Length: 523
Image (cartoon, one colour):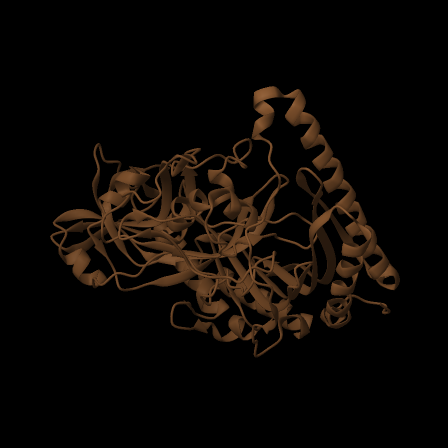
Protein backbone atom coordinates (compact mmCIF):
# COMPACT_ATOMS: atom_id res chain seq x y z
CA UNK A 1 0.00 0.00 0.00
CA UNK A 2 1.67 3.18 -1.21
CA UNK A 3 1.27 6.76 -0.03
CA UNK A 4 3.00 9.54 1.86
CA UNK A 5 0.21 10.44 4.28
CA UNK A 6 -2.48 8.74 6.31
CA UNK A 7 -6.05 9.44 5.19
CA UNK A 8 -9.50 7.86 5.31
CA UNK A 9 -9.27 6.67 1.70
CA UNK A 10 -6.59 4.09 2.60
CA UNK A 11 -9.42 1.92 3.86
CA UNK A 12 -10.42 1.03 0.29
CA UNK A 13 -7.25 -1.00 -0.26
CA UNK A 14 -7.11 -2.31 3.31
CA UNK A 15 -10.60 -3.85 3.24
CA UNK A 16 -9.70 -5.82 0.10
CA UNK A 17 -6.55 -7.32 1.58
CA UNK A 18 -7.64 -8.19 5.13
CA UNK A 19 -9.75 -11.24 4.13
CA UNK A 20 -6.80 -12.50 2.07
CA UNK A 21 -4.49 -12.23 5.09
CA UNK A 22 -6.95 -14.12 7.29
CA UNK A 23 -7.43 -16.87 4.68
CA UNK A 24 -3.65 -17.33 4.54
CA UNK A 25 -3.56 -17.59 8.33
CA UNK A 26 -6.22 -20.32 8.34
CA UNK A 27 -4.09 -22.38 5.98
CA UNK A 28 -0.77 -21.66 7.71
CA UNK A 29 -1.56 -22.00 11.43
CA UNK A 30 -2.89 -25.49 12.20
CA UNK A 31 -4.23 -24.71 15.69
CA UNK A 32 -5.97 -21.46 14.72
CA UNK A 33 -9.68 -21.61 15.48
CA UNK A 34 -10.62 -17.99 14.89
CA UNK A 35 -9.07 -14.58 14.20
CA UNK A 36 -10.24 -11.04 13.58
CA UNK A 37 -8.43 -7.93 12.39
CA UNK A 38 -9.54 -4.38 13.10
CA UNK A 39 -8.11 -1.28 11.43
CA UNK A 40 -8.98 2.26 12.51
CA UNK A 41 -8.09 5.30 10.42
CA UNK A 42 -8.77 8.87 11.58
CA UNK A 43 -8.23 12.37 10.27
CA UNK A 44 -8.76 15.02 12.92
CA UNK A 45 -8.25 18.64 13.88
CA UNK A 46 -8.84 20.75 16.97
CA UNK A 47 -8.69 24.26 18.37
CA UNK A 48 -8.96 25.75 21.83
CA UNK A 49 -9.24 29.23 23.33
CA UNK A 50 -9.09 30.53 26.89
CA UNK A 51 -10.68 33.83 27.99
CA UNK A 52 -10.66 35.17 24.44
CA UNK A 53 -7.11 34.10 23.55
CA UNK A 54 -6.05 31.20 21.33
CA UNK A 55 -4.36 28.42 23.27
CA UNK A 56 -3.93 25.63 20.74
CA UNK A 57 -4.83 24.35 17.29
CA UNK A 58 -3.62 21.62 15.01
CA UNK A 59 -4.27 18.66 12.74
CA UNK A 60 -3.51 15.01 13.36
CA UNK A 61 -4.15 11.51 12.02
CA UNK A 62 -3.99 7.93 13.20
CA UNK A 63 -3.65 4.46 11.69
CA UNK A 64 -4.11 1.63 14.15
CA UNK A 65 -4.17 -2.15 13.82
CA UNK A 66 -5.45 -4.80 16.26
CA UNK A 67 -5.55 -8.60 15.86
CA UNK A 68 -7.16 -11.21 18.09
CA UNK A 69 -6.58 -14.94 17.61
CA UNK A 70 -8.12 -17.95 19.35
CA UNK A 71 -6.01 -21.09 19.08
CA UNK A 72 -5.18 -24.36 20.76
CA UNK A 73 -5.70 -28.11 20.60
CA UNK A 74 -7.17 -29.68 23.73
CA UNK A 75 -8.03 -26.25 25.16
CA UNK A 76 -8.23 -22.97 23.29
CA UNK A 77 -7.14 -19.52 24.47
CA UNK A 78 -6.92 -16.05 22.99
CA UNK A 79 -3.95 -13.90 22.10
CA UNK A 80 -3.85 -10.37 20.77
CA UNK A 81 -1.54 -7.79 19.28
CA UNK A 82 -2.07 -4.09 18.63
CA UNK A 83 0.06 -1.34 17.13
CA UNK A 84 -0.20 2.32 16.15
CA UNK A 85 1.41 3.13 12.78
CA UNK A 86 2.63 6.18 10.88
CA UNK A 87 3.28 7.26 7.27
CA UNK A 88 6.64 5.47 7.23
CA UNK A 89 4.78 2.16 7.71
CA UNK A 90 2.45 2.49 4.72
CA UNK A 91 4.80 0.73 2.28
CA UNK A 92 4.82 -2.42 4.40
CA UNK A 93 1.41 -2.17 6.04
CA UNK A 94 0.20 -5.58 4.86
CA UNK A 95 3.45 -7.21 5.92
CA UNK A 96 2.95 -5.68 9.38
CA UNK A 97 -0.62 -7.02 9.41
CA UNK A 98 0.61 -10.54 8.63
CA UNK A 99 3.22 -10.28 11.39
CA UNK A 100 0.53 -9.11 13.79
CA UNK A 101 -1.64 -12.14 13.01
CA UNK A 102 1.34 -14.45 13.57
CA UNK A 103 2.16 -12.78 16.89
CA UNK A 104 -1.44 -12.98 18.13
CA UNK A 105 -1.55 -16.66 17.11
CA UNK A 106 1.70 -17.45 18.94
CA UNK A 107 0.39 -15.76 22.09
CA UNK A 108 -2.87 -17.70 21.87
CA UNK A 109 -1.04 -21.04 21.48
CA UNK A 110 1.26 -20.25 24.41
CA UNK A 111 -1.72 -19.30 26.58
CA UNK A 112 -3.56 -22.49 25.60
CA UNK A 113 -0.54 -24.62 26.53
CA UNK A 114 -0.37 -22.88 29.91
CA UNK A 115 -4.07 -23.53 30.49
CA UNK A 116 -3.47 -27.25 29.97
CA UNK A 117 -0.54 -27.26 32.37
CA UNK A 118 -2.38 -25.27 35.03
CA UNK A 119 -5.44 -27.51 34.89
CA UNK A 120 -3.14 -30.26 36.15
CA UNK A 121 -0.90 -28.34 38.56
CA UNK A 122 -3.67 -26.28 40.18
CA UNK A 123 -5.78 -29.30 41.13
CA UNK A 124 -9.43 -28.45 41.83
CA UNK A 125 -8.75 -24.77 41.11
CA UNK A 126 -7.49 -25.69 37.65
CA UNK A 127 -10.90 -27.05 36.74
CA UNK A 128 -12.05 -23.45 36.44
CA UNK A 129 -9.92 -23.03 33.29
CA UNK A 130 -11.92 -23.65 30.13
CA UNK A 131 -11.54 -23.11 26.42
CA UNK A 132 -12.18 -19.63 25.11
CA UNK A 133 -15.47 -19.84 23.20
CA UNK A 134 -17.38 -17.29 21.15
CA UNK A 135 -21.15 -17.36 20.81
CA UNK A 136 -22.11 -17.67 17.13
CA UNK A 137 -23.08 -14.68 14.99
CA UNK A 138 -23.91 -14.71 11.27
CA UNK A 139 -21.13 -13.39 8.99
CA UNK A 140 -21.97 -10.04 7.39
CA UNK A 141 -20.61 -7.86 4.58
CA UNK A 142 -21.58 -4.21 4.90
CA UNK A 143 -20.38 -0.65 4.35
CA UNK A 144 -21.96 2.06 6.47
CA UNK A 145 -21.31 5.81 6.44
CA UNK A 146 -22.92 8.29 8.85
CA UNK A 147 -23.80 11.36 6.75
CA UNK A 148 -22.33 14.82 7.38
CA UNK A 149 -23.23 18.03 5.61
CA UNK A 150 -19.85 19.68 6.27
CA UNK A 151 -17.15 16.97 6.53
CA UNK A 152 -15.42 17.62 9.89
CA UNK A 153 -11.80 16.95 8.95
CA UNK A 154 -12.08 18.94 5.73
CA UNK A 155 -13.10 22.23 7.37
CA UNK A 156 -10.30 24.85 7.23
CA UNK A 157 -8.52 24.95 10.56
CA UNK A 158 -8.92 28.72 10.64
CA UNK A 159 -12.68 28.19 10.86
CA UNK A 160 -12.26 26.21 14.10
CA UNK A 161 -9.89 28.81 15.48
CA UNK A 162 -12.27 31.68 14.77
CA UNK A 163 -15.19 29.78 16.34
CA UNK A 164 -13.45 29.11 19.67
CA UNK A 165 -11.88 32.55 19.85
CA UNK A 166 -15.14 34.38 19.19
CA UNK A 167 -17.18 32.32 21.66
CA UNK A 168 -14.55 32.61 24.40
CA UNK A 169 -14.20 36.35 23.81
CA UNK A 170 -17.95 36.91 23.92
CA UNK A 171 -18.21 35.15 27.30
CA UNK A 172 -15.40 37.29 28.68
CA UNK A 173 -17.03 40.49 27.44
CA UNK A 174 -20.54 39.68 28.56
CA UNK A 175 -20.22 37.92 31.95
CA UNK A 176 -18.05 39.76 34.48
CA UNK A 177 -18.49 37.11 37.17
CA UNK A 178 -16.88 34.54 34.85
CA UNK A 179 -13.20 34.97 35.68
CA UNK A 180 -12.02 32.25 33.34
CA UNK A 181 -13.46 30.30 30.41
CA UNK A 182 -12.14 27.66 28.03
CA UNK A 183 -13.74 26.65 24.73
CA UNK A 184 -12.60 23.76 22.54
CA UNK A 185 -13.60 22.05 19.31
CA UNK A 186 -12.55 18.66 17.99
CA UNK A 187 -13.65 17.74 14.45
CA UNK A 188 -12.68 14.42 12.93
CA UNK A 189 -13.67 11.45 10.78
CA UNK A 190 -13.06 7.88 11.87
CA UNK A 191 -13.15 4.79 9.67
CA UNK A 192 -13.31 1.31 11.22
CA UNK A 193 -12.80 -1.91 9.27
CA UNK A 194 -13.33 -5.34 10.88
CA UNK A 195 -12.62 -8.67 9.15
CA UNK A 196 -12.93 -12.16 10.65
CA UNK A 197 -12.02 -15.70 9.65
CA UNK A 198 -15.75 -16.48 9.76
CA UNK A 199 -16.30 -14.23 6.72
CA UNK A 200 -17.43 -10.96 8.29
CA UNK A 201 -16.19 -7.76 6.63
CA UNK A 202 -17.69 -4.49 7.87
CA UNK A 203 -16.56 -0.97 7.00
CA UNK A 204 -18.01 1.93 9.03
CA UNK A 205 -17.24 5.64 8.80
CA UNK A 206 -18.27 8.15 11.48
CA UNK A 207 -17.97 11.95 11.45
CA UNK A 208 -17.58 13.50 14.91
CA UNK A 209 -17.80 17.04 16.21
CA UNK A 210 -17.14 17.56 19.90
CA UNK A 211 -17.19 20.97 21.59
CA UNK A 212 -16.54 21.64 25.25
CA UNK A 213 -17.25 24.72 27.31
CA UNK A 214 -15.77 25.36 30.75
CA UNK A 215 -16.60 28.45 32.80
CA UNK A 216 -15.67 29.53 36.31
CA UNK A 217 -17.85 32.16 37.94
CA UNK A 218 -16.93 33.87 41.22
CA UNK A 219 -18.98 35.96 43.64
CA UNK A 220 -17.15 36.79 46.87
CA UNK A 221 -15.89 33.49 48.27
CA UNK A 222 -18.25 31.38 46.15
CA UNK A 223 -16.70 29.70 43.10
CA UNK A 224 -18.92 27.98 40.54
CA UNK A 225 -17.03 25.91 37.93
CA UNK A 226 -19.26 24.39 35.25
CA UNK A 227 -18.47 22.20 32.28
CA UNK A 228 -20.60 20.75 29.50
CA UNK A 229 -20.22 19.12 26.10
CA UNK A 230 -21.97 19.75 22.80
CA UNK A 231 -21.16 16.68 20.72
CA UNK A 232 -22.76 14.59 18.02
CA UNK A 233 -22.06 12.38 15.04
CA UNK A 234 -22.33 14.71 12.07
CA UNK A 235 -20.63 17.59 10.32
CA UNK A 236 -19.25 20.98 11.31
CA UNK A 237 -22.74 22.39 10.87
CA UNK A 238 -23.29 21.30 14.48
CA UNK A 239 -20.99 24.10 15.67
CA UNK A 240 -22.73 26.83 13.70
CA UNK A 241 -26.35 25.66 13.60
CA UNK A 242 -26.72 23.26 16.53
CA UNK A 243 -28.66 19.99 16.46
CA UNK A 244 -32.43 19.67 16.15
CA UNK A 245 -33.29 15.98 15.90
CA UNK A 246 -36.07 14.02 17.56
CA UNK A 247 -34.10 13.10 20.69
CA UNK A 248 -30.92 15.20 20.38
CA UNK A 249 -31.30 18.97 20.60
CA UNK A 250 -28.56 21.57 21.09
CA UNK A 251 -28.21 25.26 20.25
CA UNK A 252 -25.12 26.35 18.30
CA UNK A 253 -21.82 26.59 20.15
CA UNK A 254 -22.13 30.32 20.85
CA UNK A 255 -25.57 30.07 22.49
CA UNK A 256 -24.65 26.80 24.25
CA UNK A 257 -21.60 28.39 25.87
CA UNK A 258 -23.30 31.67 26.74
CA UNK A 259 -26.12 29.75 28.44
CA UNK A 260 -23.55 27.89 30.55
CA UNK A 261 -21.83 31.15 31.52
CA UNK A 262 -25.15 32.78 32.45
CA UNK A 263 -26.10 29.80 34.60
CA UNK A 264 -22.75 29.75 36.41
CA UNK A 265 -22.99 33.51 37.08
CA UNK A 266 -26.48 33.09 38.49
CA UNK A 267 -25.48 30.14 40.69
CA UNK A 268 -22.52 32.03 42.14
CA UNK A 269 -25.02 34.22 44.01
CA UNK A 270 -27.50 31.45 44.88
CA UNK A 271 -27.81 29.99 48.40
CA UNK A 272 -26.19 26.67 49.26
CA UNK A 273 -28.40 23.62 48.87
CA UNK A 274 -29.66 22.19 52.17
CA UNK A 275 -29.20 18.58 53.27
CA UNK A 276 -32.22 16.54 54.36
CA UNK A 277 -32.23 14.05 57.22
CA UNK A 278 -34.45 11.59 55.36
CA UNK A 279 -35.44 10.69 51.79
CA UNK A 280 -37.64 13.31 50.09
CA UNK A 281 -39.51 13.54 46.79
CA UNK A 282 -37.13 14.40 43.95
CA UNK A 283 -37.61 14.97 40.24
CA UNK A 284 -34.51 14.43 38.13
CA UNK A 285 -34.43 16.10 34.71
CA UNK A 286 -33.14 14.47 31.48
CA UNK A 287 -29.70 16.14 31.71
CA UNK A 288 -29.21 14.87 35.27
CA UNK A 289 -30.45 11.45 34.21
CA UNK A 290 -27.71 11.36 31.59
CA UNK A 291 -25.18 10.72 34.34
CA UNK A 292 -27.60 8.69 36.45
CA UNK A 293 -28.32 6.32 33.55
CA UNK A 294 -24.60 6.13 32.82
CA UNK A 295 -23.51 5.20 36.33
CA UNK A 296 -26.52 3.23 37.64
CA UNK A 297 -28.09 1.67 34.51
CA UNK A 298 -24.96 1.53 32.34
CA UNK A 299 -21.78 0.34 34.01
CA UNK A 300 -23.41 -2.23 36.31
CA UNK A 301 -25.10 -3.77 33.27
CA UNK A 302 -21.87 -4.46 31.36
CA UNK A 303 -21.35 -8.21 31.57
CA UNK A 304 -17.55 -8.17 31.93
CA UNK A 305 -18.13 -6.26 35.17
CA UNK A 306 -20.72 -8.83 36.19
CA UNK A 307 -18.33 -11.70 35.50
CA UNK A 308 -15.68 -10.07 37.76
CA UNK A 309 -13.33 -9.22 34.87
CA UNK A 310 -13.11 -5.64 36.16
CA UNK A 311 -13.05 -6.30 39.89
CA UNK A 312 -9.39 -5.44 40.52
CA UNK A 313 -9.53 -1.93 39.06
CA UNK A 314 -13.15 -0.83 38.55
CA UNK A 315 -15.48 -2.96 40.65
CA UNK A 316 -18.35 -5.40 40.30
CA UNK A 317 -22.12 -5.15 40.00
CA UNK A 318 -24.86 -5.82 42.54
CA UNK A 319 -26.90 -7.38 39.73
CA UNK A 320 -24.77 -10.53 39.40
CA UNK A 321 -23.04 -12.20 42.34
CA UNK A 322 -22.57 -15.44 40.38
CA UNK A 323 -23.96 -17.43 37.47
CA UNK A 324 -26.52 -19.00 39.80
CA UNK A 325 -27.00 -15.99 42.05
CA UNK A 326 -28.13 -12.90 40.20
CA UNK A 327 -31.01 -10.50 39.65
CA UNK A 328 -31.96 -11.63 36.12
CA UNK A 329 -35.74 -12.00 35.97
CA UNK A 330 -36.21 -10.34 39.36
CA UNK A 331 -37.78 -7.02 40.28
CA UNK A 332 -35.33 -4.20 40.88
CA UNK A 333 -37.60 -1.22 40.16
CA UNK A 334 -41.15 0.02 39.91
CA UNK A 335 -43.41 -1.04 37.05
CA UNK A 336 -42.96 2.42 35.54
CA UNK A 337 -39.20 2.06 35.11
CA UNK A 338 -37.51 0.61 32.03
CA UNK A 339 -33.98 1.00 30.69
CA UNK A 340 -32.10 -0.19 27.62
CA UNK A 341 -28.98 0.22 25.48
CA UNK A 342 -29.45 0.84 21.76
CA UNK A 343 -26.49 1.49 19.42
CA UNK A 344 -28.94 2.20 16.59
CA UNK A 345 -30.31 5.34 18.24
CA UNK A 346 -28.84 8.46 16.60
CA UNK A 347 -26.82 9.51 19.64
CA UNK A 348 -23.12 9.93 20.38
CA UNK A 349 -22.86 6.19 21.02
CA UNK A 350 -24.30 5.19 17.63
CA UNK A 351 -22.85 2.41 15.44
CA UNK A 352 -24.16 -0.44 13.29
CA UNK A 353 -21.57 -3.10 14.20
CA UNK A 354 -19.30 -3.47 17.21
CA UNK A 355 -15.59 -4.28 17.07
CA UNK A 356 -16.21 -8.00 16.65
CA UNK A 357 -18.41 -7.28 13.65
CA UNK A 358 -21.49 -8.29 15.64
CA UNK A 359 -24.64 -6.52 14.41
CA UNK A 360 -25.75 -3.94 16.96
CA UNK A 361 -29.17 -4.32 18.51
CA UNK A 362 -31.19 -2.95 21.40
CA UNK A 363 -30.74 -4.84 24.67
CA UNK A 364 -33.35 -4.35 27.38
CA UNK A 365 -31.87 -4.05 30.87
CA UNK A 366 -34.98 -3.22 32.89
CA UNK A 367 -38.48 -3.97 31.64
CA UNK A 368 -41.25 -2.52 33.79
CA UNK A 369 -39.04 -2.93 36.84
CA UNK A 370 -37.76 -6.46 36.02
CA UNK A 371 -34.05 -6.87 35.31
CA UNK A 372 -33.61 -8.63 31.96
CA UNK A 373 -29.95 -8.67 31.03
CA UNK A 374 -26.55 -7.22 30.26
CA UNK A 375 -24.55 -5.71 27.44
CA UNK A 376 -22.16 -8.42 26.27
CA UNK A 377 -19.42 -9.62 23.94
CA UNK A 378 -19.37 -12.91 22.07
CA UNK A 379 -17.15 -14.49 24.75
CA UNK A 380 -19.22 -13.33 27.72
CA UNK A 381 -22.39 -14.19 25.85
CA UNK A 382 -21.14 -17.77 25.51
CA UNK A 383 -20.43 -17.92 29.25
CA UNK A 384 -23.90 -16.71 30.22
CA UNK A 385 -25.66 -18.58 27.41
CA UNK A 386 -27.46 -15.61 25.88
CA UNK A 387 -27.40 -13.92 22.46
CA UNK A 388 -24.58 -11.51 21.47
CA UNK A 389 -25.91 -7.94 21.35
CA UNK A 390 -22.98 -6.01 19.87
CA UNK A 391 -21.41 -4.07 22.75
CA UNK A 392 -17.73 -5.03 22.46
CA UNK A 393 -15.91 -1.78 21.70
CA UNK A 394 -12.45 -0.23 21.98
CA UNK A 395 -11.48 3.44 22.07
CA UNK A 396 -8.86 2.94 19.38
CA UNK A 397 -7.63 0.49 16.81
CA UNK A 398 -4.59 -0.75 18.73
CA UNK A 399 -6.24 -1.79 22.01
CA UNK A 400 -8.37 -4.68 23.20
CA UNK A 401 -12.13 -4.08 23.13
CA UNK A 402 -14.14 -4.04 26.34
CA UNK A 403 -17.87 -4.27 26.92
CA UNK A 404 -19.02 -0.66 26.65
CA UNK A 405 -22.26 1.26 26.70
CA UNK A 406 -23.65 2.50 23.41
CA UNK A 407 -26.69 4.73 23.94
CA UNK A 408 -27.79 3.61 27.42
CA UNK A 409 -30.95 5.31 28.65
CA UNK A 410 -34.04 5.23 30.82
CA UNK A 411 -37.08 4.64 28.61
CA UNK A 412 -39.67 7.32 27.94
CA UNK A 413 -42.80 7.38 30.06
CA UNK A 414 -46.24 8.94 29.59
CA UNK A 415 -46.39 11.72 32.20
CA UNK A 416 -46.21 15.42 31.44
CA UNK A 417 -43.23 16.85 33.41
CA UNK A 418 -45.25 19.94 34.36
CA UNK A 419 -47.93 17.69 35.85
CA UNK A 420 -45.26 15.70 37.69
CA UNK A 421 -44.15 18.90 39.40
CA UNK A 422 -47.70 20.13 40.04
CA UNK A 423 -48.51 16.93 41.95
CA UNK A 424 -45.72 17.49 44.51
CA UNK A 425 -46.62 19.21 47.77
CA UNK A 426 -42.99 19.50 48.83
CA UNK A 427 -39.87 18.19 47.14
CA UNK A 428 -36.93 19.15 44.93
CA UNK A 429 -36.27 19.42 41.20
CA UNK A 430 -32.74 18.26 40.34
CA UNK A 431 -31.41 19.79 37.12
CA UNK A 432 -28.19 19.09 35.24
CA UNK A 433 -25.41 16.68 36.21
CA UNK A 434 -21.96 17.41 37.56
CA UNK A 435 -19.93 14.87 39.58
CA UNK A 436 -20.65 11.19 40.42
CA UNK A 437 -19.60 9.20 43.48
CA UNK A 438 -20.58 5.56 43.07
CA UNK A 439 -20.24 2.46 45.25
CA UNK A 440 -17.90 -0.32 44.13
CA UNK A 441 -20.77 -2.55 43.01
CA UNK A 442 -23.03 0.38 42.00
CA UNK A 443 -25.52 -0.52 44.71
CA UNK A 444 -25.72 3.11 45.87
CA UNK A 445 -24.75 6.51 44.56
CA UNK A 446 -24.28 10.20 45.21
CA UNK A 447 -24.41 12.44 42.14
CA UNK A 448 -24.22 16.23 42.28
CA UNK A 449 -26.29 18.50 40.06
CA UNK A 450 -25.89 21.94 38.54
CA UNK A 451 -29.11 23.36 40.02
CA UNK A 452 -31.65 22.35 42.66
CA UNK A 453 -35.08 23.97 42.86
CA UNK A 454 -37.34 23.58 45.86
CA UNK A 455 -40.91 22.54 45.00
CA UNK A 456 -43.72 23.85 47.20
CA UNK A 457 -47.41 23.32 46.48
CA UNK A 458 -46.70 22.12 42.95
CA UNK A 459 -44.51 25.08 41.91
CA UNK A 460 -40.78 25.60 41.47
CA UNK A 461 -39.40 27.89 44.13
CA UNK A 462 -35.93 28.94 45.27
CA UNK A 463 -32.87 27.78 43.33
CA UNK A 464 -29.85 26.36 45.18
CA UNK A 465 -26.25 25.72 44.22
CA UNK A 466 -23.93 22.82 45.06
CA UNK A 467 -26.57 20.19 45.65
CA UNK A 468 -27.39 16.69 44.54
CA UNK A 469 -29.00 13.47 45.69
CA UNK A 470 -27.92 10.26 47.38
CA UNK A 471 -29.75 6.93 47.38
CA UNK A 472 -29.57 3.18 47.35
CA UNK A 473 -29.86 2.25 43.66
CA UNK A 474 -32.59 -0.35 44.12
CA UNK A 475 -34.56 1.89 46.51
CA UNK A 476 -34.41 4.75 44.01
CA UNK A 477 -35.64 2.47 41.21
CA UNK A 478 -38.39 0.96 43.36
CA UNK A 479 -39.69 4.38 44.44
CA UNK A 480 -40.16 5.71 40.92
CA UNK A 481 -43.81 6.82 40.74
CA UNK A 482 -43.81 8.91 37.53
CA UNK A 483 -41.77 8.93 34.31
CA UNK A 484 -41.94 11.82 31.86
CA UNK A 485 -42.62 11.93 28.14
CA UNK A 486 -39.68 14.32 27.55
CA UNK A 487 -37.00 11.78 26.52
CA UNK A 488 -33.64 13.33 25.60
CA UNK A 489 -30.32 11.85 24.56
CA UNK A 490 -27.05 13.58 25.55
CA UNK A 491 -23.37 12.86 24.85
CA UNK A 492 -20.87 11.55 27.37
CA UNK A 493 -17.49 12.36 25.84
CA UNK A 494 -15.10 10.79 28.34
CA UNK A 495 -16.28 7.52 29.85
CA UNK A 496 -13.28 5.77 31.35
CA UNK A 497 -12.89 2.02 31.65
CA UNK A 498 -10.11 -0.53 31.56
CA UNK A 499 -6.49 -0.75 32.63
CA UNK A 500 -4.75 0.99 30.97
CA UNK A 501 -7.65 3.42 30.80
CA UNK A 502 -9.73 3.64 27.63
CA UNK A 503 -11.77 6.83 27.23
CA UNK A 504 -14.89 6.29 25.12
CA UNK A 505 -17.67 8.38 23.56
CA UNK A 506 -21.21 7.33 24.53
CA UNK A 507 -24.82 8.46 24.58
CA UNK A 508 -26.93 8.55 27.74
CA UNK A 509 -30.16 10.12 28.90
CA UNK A 510 -33.84 9.55 29.48
CA UNK A 511 -36.92 11.52 30.53
CA UNK A 512 -37.77 13.30 33.78
CA UNK A 513 -38.13 10.80 36.63
CA UNK A 514 -39.82 11.22 40.02
CA UNK A 515 -38.64 9.15 42.97
CA UNK A 516 -37.30 9.55 46.51
CA UNK A 517 -33.74 10.22 47.70
CA UNK A 518 -31.72 12.14 50.26
CA UNK A 519 -31.01 15.71 49.20
CA UNK A 520 -27.34 16.49 49.82
CA UNK A 521 -25.82 19.99 49.94
CA UNK A 522 -22.22 21.12 50.15
CA UNK A 523 -19.68 23.76 49.28
